[in-house]
Length: 251
Image (cartoon, rainbow, N blue to C red):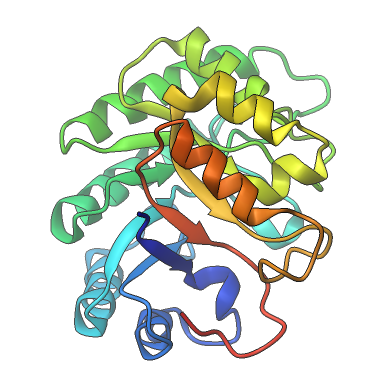
């Protein structure tokens, strides 16, 4: 039913970025996704070309790509609502859409960004940035997705309803919900209710078990039930494995 993809950024953090798609292929995967794979929001054409070539030479499909999200190890969680960084966000949109044209990528994950103390207008900025990203993604038939996150106290989107409220507020085509089972479960969202209520908004699914964010089967989430619920709700899109490995990655 589903074509599974592997998130190379979390699966192979110790490998150079340009070796990760090949490692996924060697593990038996035919599809991959990445967090933003560049050191800046506006990498050079040479950097972009090398990344694209690494995916092509591995013989895998890049099905999902995060847009630039700031310094993730330092706690940043996206640029969408970050005043003063709109140009960086839009630069990354242009790069991502270019990669999508070359590699066939049709899902771009736009992390919303943390709340900043003493700053107003973050949601208005987010609306503008998301509308722009959706318009650009729409040129190649792609979708920009919003993801609820756990483990980030200042990140305002914690449930599926939180993310869908933003989608409704923006009101643009080519926007969807990233249904990350791990984050939603950790945040206490009702997975069954969210699938039933928002089935038509789910554009991409990611899996990791909870607690621990490791392989499905290492925690408490009933994945056969979740996958069955998604199927019954009519979901036919991609499912990506976005987990921290405790053993050798295999398809």
